[in-house]
Length: 122
Image 1 (cartoon, rainbow, N blue to C red):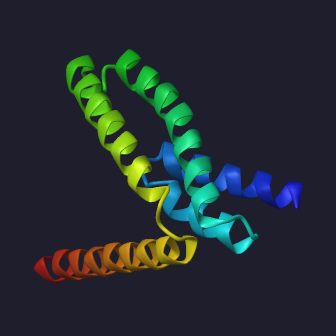
Image 2 (cartoon, rainbow, N blue to C red):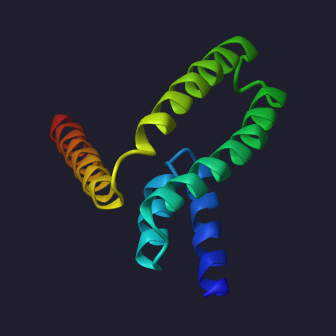
């Protein structure tokens, strides 16, 4: 089990560092191995915060990101995340799984439509 969790963490970290949203992989995989939805989301947020500091540091250092917009989005994200955490604590795990599944389905459909539109326009 420990080895599987390491593999899940590696995959999530690689995808997260490429800007692909490691949480879209991390949360479902943690749920599959038996971790409750709320705990999977907590692990995802914790890992995201740590990864964000490193990614932000290197992007600013390499001139790929400006400090002010990064700081502004970070503060907005902190406020909205705190607000969301207060709401989520009262939602049942099954409902969270359904909401997250619907969210992933919508994202997948939007990405598929976007790909088809770009492909047809060429």
